[in-house]
Amino acid sequence: MDGWEAFSNKMIVSAILVIPVAIIIVFDDLKKLKPASLIFLSTAFIIGVASIFGEYRASTKTNYYVVSKDEQKYVVIAPYDKQFIIAPVDLDKKVILPQFQFIDQKSEKDDRVELTPVHTGKLDVKNLTEDELK
View 1 (tube, helix red, strand yellow):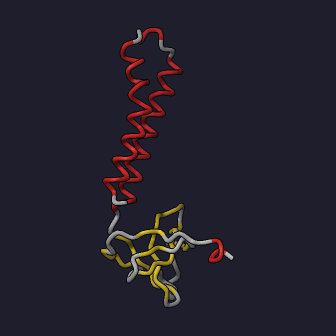
View 2 (cartoon, rainbow, N blue to C red):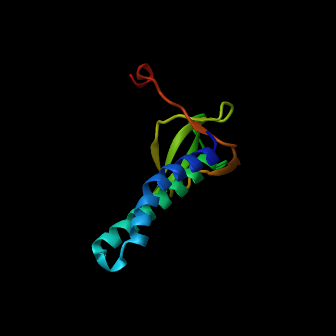
View 3 (cartoon, helix red, strand yellow):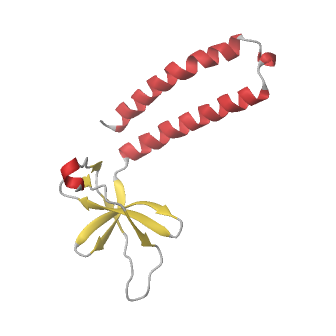
C-alpha cells in the first residue's frame, strides 16, 4: 500500500466519523453545546488529523540515516531523549526488521556513532512469524 492509499483510507474513515458530528454541530444551536463538549470534539479532530498526517509521512519516507555496527546496517527510526531508536535493515530487500535498539547520540571519541544519510527508497517493516520470535 503506498502513501496515498493509506491517506485515502484514513480520510474515508475519518469522514464517516467526523461529518455526522460536524453536521449536528452546525445545524444544532451552538449555544446549547457545552464548552467541555466543544473542547472534546476539537481535541478529537486535531488528534485524528495528526494521526492521518503522521501515518502518511511514515508510509512515504524514502530517506534514512544509516548506522553500521558489527557488520550490520541499521536505520535510525527516531530520536528519543538522548538516544536514537535503530532497527536492522536489509537495503537490498528494502526491509526493516522489527528488532529495535537504543544507542546513545553522544559517543566517546574512540567509539563514535557515524550516521550516513542514505536515499533508501521506501522501506517496509518485515512481519515476523511466531517461529521467528522464538
